[in-house]
Picture: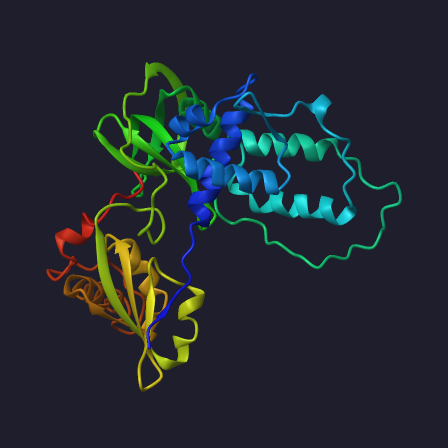
Length: 345
């Protein structure tokens, strides 16, 4: 029997909701449904559905004469938040840390700073939640603000970007959307020099400044579409099949791949079928399963995994640590794998 892993559009919806909130925050007189739909590139029915989500959550949006706007501070009731509600806001702020520097977090920080602690706070520290300090480098707030400003004003940004090898380049981009994957923030943008849409990790952008040049790229579809991305790559879809041994088969649904289906085998193992973007990002995910995973299809991915594992095994040949980098194997990953998607930068 085939079991389908739960599929959700939560990330795409969250981005749409954030775009809608930012759009309304910049309008004093309000916007019509048609204006909003044209700006964030959604249909009228999608706009009304997302608006309903915001209104049901208590977001203060008013419609008058066919125009939607935020209520002003003077029109809002006084806040009477409980301690648990305040704690929930603080926990949410911790989880939104990768988006530091954005207008959304600036407003949240301003709100939290205005809240006064209870007069009789307990000296004992007791909590049911604990969050580890982030280990990943955070992007510079100035960089994030510049990217957001360029996107909002539809202008180009000039950035100094560091690639994986540590080399720096100065390029011009037209930001489309900021996305977070595995606690790393990325900006999806049109690269002027390459004439193509690329994805850039914000923590690798050393400097960014908004130019006077107007953005000219207009994406045909939603800029945040990453339906088959294992993380952030986009490109042509590829169908893969991976078998997981019985000792890890139960974890398959805890770490689902895009559009994943699971097929239990008689020996207790499970075969996963998924449609992913490219065949590069998926390699690190499969390697994380170690010897418990085996790629069945496609053959080019299987060969790439074999070359990767053979290269790793060579480092353990002999009695001690490898003293020199081994020569590149002639059976290295096929060239098509290196081009199987649009990667960061």
